[in-house]
Image 1 (cartoon, rainbow, N blue to C red):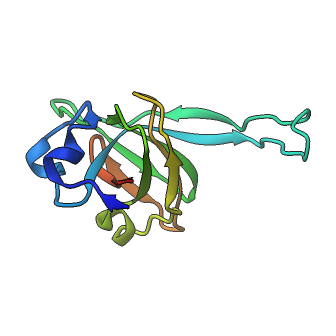
Image 2 (image 1 turned 180 degrees about the vertical axis):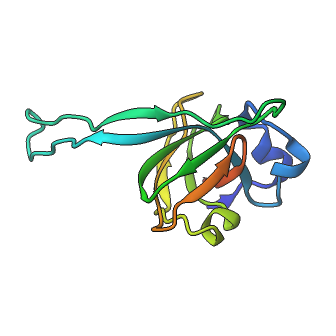
Length: 151
């Protein structure tokens, strides 16, 4: 198994904001498009008959007059980020999503996620926690990193 590199990797990514900035040798930076706040607990059980998805609502970014992009001013809490980018044509690969180093240094906490056989163009999401002082995130910020492991 090996990580896809550079152009081969970017050939599997759609809705790219700025390829020259986002593309790296063995990973691709993902940019945040939408942030949701969790509003009502989900439910899990063994058999699945009582399963309920968590409820969430969109957090609107705040824009100053004349700004092209707004900011999410997030207080401490649990959120879900949906990325601008999607993956395509990824048979026999495993996608790994982790925080971008800048998001980590800004205090964001999230686990690395693995998605075997990611469906074409399905949204890429990452659940995360904003720390006690909160975190300000600009629209289209590089928030996560994508690795594609191929066999």
